[in-house]
Image 1 (cartoon, rainbow, N blue to C red):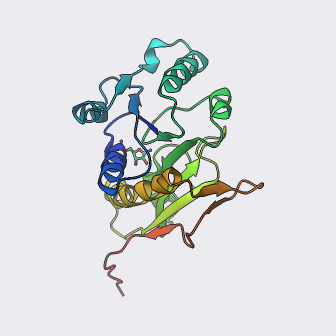
Image 2: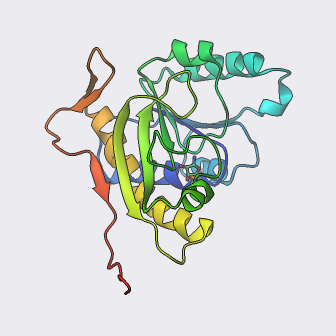
Image 3: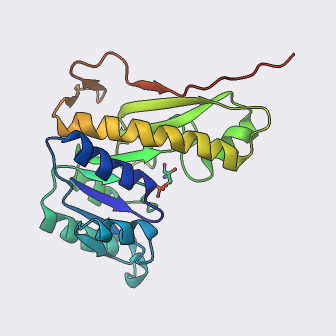
Length: 215
Ligand code: GRF
């Protein structure tokens, strides 16, 4: 498995740590970042993982960047490419090349709130449930067969930051679980694209804390 990041890399970290601690039948073969200054890249390097910085700014177009990225990915020969906070829109050609092997985590309950600023979008819409989604990537941004989701409550005094923290806490639980299922070869897709995971009845993680109801 190969992990792609753009920044902090806290999700990548939970994957690396869970893979090691739980002895997944998989290996994380490397970490690629499109930003050389990504903090997660330094952490990965310290862990002895193979890392590569591929600055998208060095490329004139999305197509040329994606071609270079694909070339770099293929040297690692990964079964799965895990997008863990990789903040780049990928070209359809790139996505099609890795159909069924590209997995993303998005901080909303898809199909609600694709794109950026998902926590602010959730607050602006007044939804009472928010969360995150692990899904296979398709050419449509933040869209694709859902592997697992987490749900958190939206609280009355939430700001985008407090909501983001609550969601991130569940990302760190959901993502390692879902990627472990992939590593174990338990994830399959029906002809209609829908996902099943062998031996797993529910693929929903519910954030648990005492929620005070007022009134
Ligand atoms: C996460 O919330 C992820 O879902 C989103 O960007 C954030 C990345 O955080 N796409 P990190 O780099 O994994 O710490």
